[in-house]
Structure formats: C-alpha cells, structure tokens
Length: 413
Ligand code: FAD
Image: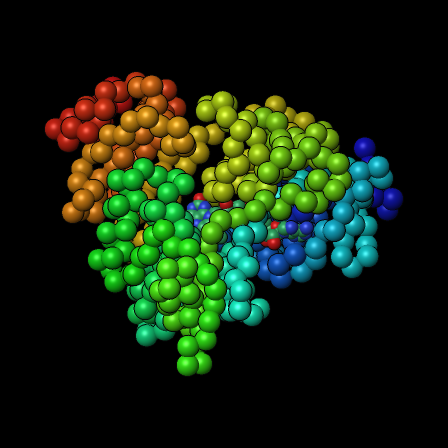
C-alpha cells in the first residue's frame, strides 16, 4: 500500500468535487478510513448541489454559497484536504500518483474517480465563444443570469430534462423562451409519447414556443441581433442561446491510464475499475445493473451518492454491492415529476389519471407484463408504490394500474 513518505497513513485521493465526491469523503470517515483524504476539484467551489442550477438558482438572489453541501471547516475537521481550482491531469498507476495541473504529484493508496460529465456542445457555424452556454456549473448559471430577465429572448437547444427545467424557470422570470428540439417530440430518449405530449402541452400553456423536428443550420445576424436559423428557413432571434443536448462522461483520464472504459469508466458491483485500488462513482461510470441486467450509465444524484457510499465501503475493505433502484426527479412550474426505474425497452404503458388536460397522472411502464418504471407527475403515492412494484419485479395488469377506482396502496398487494 502506498503511503505518504512523511506519514504512515494510507492516502485516498478523490478526483472531482461533486455529488459523488462529497458523499464519498463523509462515507469514508463513517466506514473507518483513518488515512488522509484529498479531494481534487477543477471548479473553484467546494462540492455543491447541482440540481438547483436549472431550477431556483437561475433566478437572481441565491448566492453560490447557498448551494454548498458544507462549510469548508467541516472538511477540515474531517481531515480532508481540498485542492480546489485544480485539475488532475494524469493517473500514474505504476508509481501510484495523481499528477495535478500545477505540476505536483500526489501519492495514493486508494483512488476514487468522481469526475462526472460535461455538457455536449454543438458546433454552430457563425457562433462566437460565449454565444452559447450550457447549464452545468455555478459559473455557467452566473453567466446566464444577466439574460434571465423579463423580455429577454432565450433560445434553448435541446428538450431534455435540463432544457425543459431551464425553460420553465426562465418563463417564471418573464423571459421569452423558444425550445428547439431535433427529435419529433420532447424528452424522446427517456419517456413515452404520452408523457412527452403532456410536457409539450404544459410548456405551451406556460407560453414557451416549442419547435420539434428542428434542424439547426447556423447562426446569423439580423439587424445586429443574433438569430438561430433552421434548415427549413425559419429563424429565432436570441439574446442568449442555451445548449442542453446531453452530456459526455469525463472518462478520458481513466482511459489514458489504461483503465477499462466504454462510454464511461467501467466498474463492477463494488464500484472498482479494472484496477482494484482505483474506484469510480457517479456520472462518469458505466456498470451492469443487477436489476435490469443491462449496461447503464446513469446521470442522477441517487446514483452518484449510492455509488459513492458503495465505493467508500469497498475502499475500507467492507463488503460492498451497488444494486440500488434508479430514481430521479424534475421540477417544472407546478409539476413535480418523480421517476423510478428505467423505462427503456417497455412494451406497454398504463396511464393512471388524465395526462391530456390535467397536471396529475402516473405512467407505469411494463415489459412482458413486469412493471419496470414509473413516471409520476404530482403523484407521490404512485411513485412510492411504483418503486415497490419495480423492486419486486411485480406483474400487474395494465388495466388495474390505470384504474383510479383501485386504491394506489392496493396496487402493491
Ligand atoms: P458532478 O456533480 O458533475 O461532479 C464532478 C466534478 O468533477 C465536477 O465539478 C468536475 O468539474 C470535476 N472534474 C472533472 N474532471 C476533473 C479533473 N480531471 N480534475 C478535477 N476535477 C474534475 N439529478 C437528479 O437526480 N435530479 C435532478 O433534478 C437533477 N437536475 C440537474 C440539473 C442540472 C442543471 C444538472 C447539470 C444536473 C442535474 N442532475 C439531476 C444530475 C446530477 O446533478 C448529476 O447526476 C450529479 O451531479 C453527478 O454527480 P457526480 O459527482 O458524478 O458529478
């Protein structure tokens, strides 16, 4: 085991300072790691809560500090060294060191890679740096805020959860918002057509212009104002363009170190990479879901935190197995969407409640009769019951799931 030449303590380094990293440091101490812990994060901030970035934090007023998980003193008292504003540029496996962008090399006995993901951006002919912004970091949102004002014209590219949440918040602030989506419907990668239709309706009711099937041709200037031009000739003036077309896992540092990767860092059920002293957790990982028996890469707080706890236990030599049921949430206007499970591959759907005129329903996804996922819109009870049904691999008749005369609690009996 590698130790600091100055001490006999084993050293644990965590690369990345996001959700997974924060959970890992606290779990390591709980699990009995007595050695040193160093957290290397390229952002200037200590670990912070990312989901509010596309929600409440977009509106002016909240200070970055309000998103921080803990005061820096908490890390200090836990014996954690924060190396912030520092990028890890290489993992030297032969000598068990992590090289930083300031030239230092830090030794490690155990290493956790928690580098998350970065936004995919598009190459838009005519666009200058700063014309298009993603929503991933505090600093991204601080750059967006001056445009988030009544009457400001904002074009969002991409109608995934982050794009739609951002659209909802910008509308609330009073901006004029257009969403351009390449697919024929919003949320096409993650939901059924009925749920997509619900969100399109809600956004239109709230005054968002949604254009699906949009092929972007370029950026042009119209009387000194930027405008996005579509291939069909339509154009949309924009004071700011926000890009929300998904993310790419930050797995290059692992790949360069010779660790196994495949659209993410490959980890086993204990979150170990192909090198047992190097673990990984969060958005940067890909693993085989025990429940779905499928290779998945998840982007959620639940996954980041649960994997981090598993990795911390494994680092401390405790039995560790990650098999949590995925869940996620999204807030848009007065709509609270809670999702449990993974709907990919569903062959039937049961809609409970009215998705076409109201704002409260649940969509249960079935595959060969088994409940595999639920999207619950302002339906916390259905979300809870859905979780139980999915975990139990329950087979429930679709008509029974859809029948509001059957009490929700009875669905799991
Ligand atoms: P991150 O939180 O991204 O942290 C990784 C950190 O590592 C980053 O700070 C990155 O800069 C740093 N890093 C990368 N490479 C290096 C390097 N070489 N050296 C040093 N540092 C490095 N999830 C939900 O469940 N519900 C939601 O409602 C929700 N809303 C979201 C809204 C937004 C706007 C965004 C962006 C995400 C949202 N998510 C949501 C997803 C959730 O935030 C992520 O799944 C979660 O942050 C993943 O945690 P992580 O620790 O893996 O990565």
